[in-house]
Length: 292
Image (cartoon, rainbow, N blue to C red; front, side, top):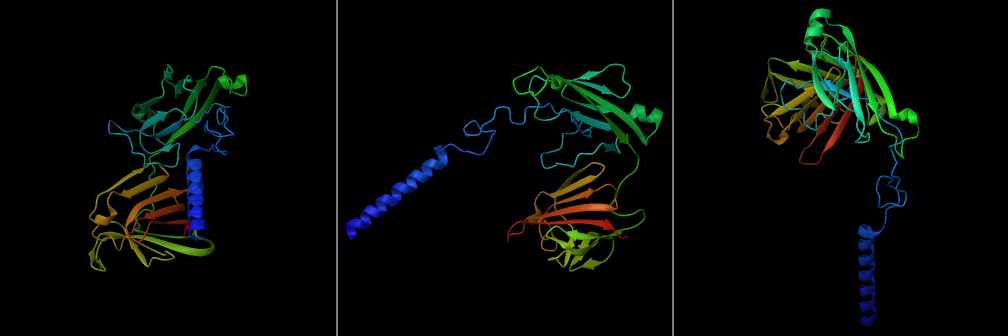
């Protein structure tokens, strides 16, 4: 009996060794971008050339946004400086030629910033400026046709003095009717307000309060801790660098980040809250329409 048990232990150990070895050495079968996989395709995602260039508000000499500032793309600007970047994923030998508005000469390069202040001073805001990008790519074994070797796209950037805000002008409270993505069939109301005076559970104003969460009574914005943010015309993102150091961390439920996205207008909203309490990270997402 003891001898059989010994053989069983050796057999199980050997099986474990084979399984662990296979995790590292056996070829994968379902990733076309991985040369080690059975279905590897060197042309996967490379049969066409992308012309959708990237635009965002310019940096004006400051450091560029960090990776967490991953905003929803938008072609509307309420700032005069715009940063242009080429599309991702094209062949390294592609070249790029830009026509910026009515500039006399085209520009070349992968990334640059343009200040439209003079143009807007002469022509006024609430105006559109066409931007054309021509991408030239030598023919290779992956491109599906000669048409991919020279491609041009034109988009219009819109410049406006309008400032979208979660509150209507003169108001410090906003109410939205919609639903939480965790309960899409259940109607919900989300109220967001800015309180200038008073005290809430031992915390003095000013502070922001949000009510209507399915599992949180009242959520207070971070106080007395470092936060950072970035935004474009439709998307605003705020992060807390150290949510555990906020003076109201329990009332704020350790908010790590808040995303506010205006969908089509500032009456339609998507909000995503990400929390990092000691009990474990969780996310709350709400989508709704303004009631007031």
